[in-house]
Length: 344
Image (cartoon, rainbow, N blue to C red; front, side, top):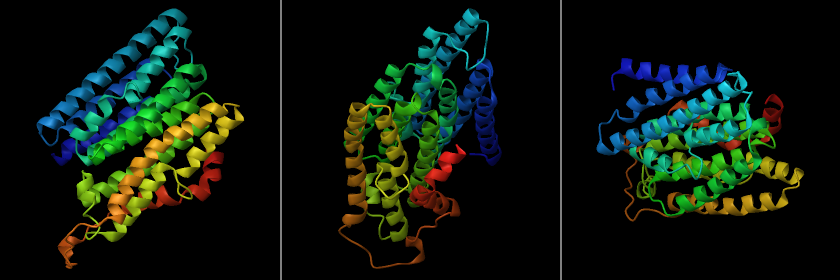
């Protein structure tokens, strides 16, 4: 892609998200979401492959439907209350707006577009779609968290955790696995949204860090299939080792970064006397743990049948400082969790 066009698209992404973040008016927030949607489509189709065109079309149709629902609900709410303020919603439109924002995020059962879209686009665009594109809808959900329907959030949160685990078990494509991982993590965030919005934001920041670290690592070794990462150990042993640890962090194993949000969410659910919900959530997360452990097994504990002894320059992988930084954050923030909670 032309560097100037790329810069314009990335700048538009930044402007769209910033516009939604600073808005207190539904119409301005909607405009920011639309700019975001339109800016990422050229990035999806920068490699004019039929699969990329299909992914961009699916993404556009899904996001356009969700945006139309947001605009309709906000307009009807303004007609009823006389206010366009984000935090002032009347009852029936809170549910429709919540559903539309969850559709934009890719929460189950409105998740069908997400694995297909991420599978059809390059890793770099998949990184933007899995992290940056979720900031604006999640911010709007956080702003209306006190008005949302608790039963709806619990149902969609548990469904997302289950679908995120079940969907990822059978996959051989790494991008689809990351998509189902994203669905599962978003389920944890939505589950706790009504009880403790600060904890949702805390979990969201950690999710972005860990997902970005995983995508940067995959981009460094140019792998999109499980069969490709199984033979990547001879190319870059250190990077593959850190990738394995990032996967375990995504799974939520102590003492890595990903353990912190899960621990705090379970403690919060126990504090709210929802022990059954906490138990079901932990059991459902074991499904996701299985496919994370399967990936780590394939990467570290199995070796390809023919390992060339050569360690010449062309076999080594150039790691960017950004990859190193995000990986370090994705592995070692756990001791700093109380500090982050105080800041948030």
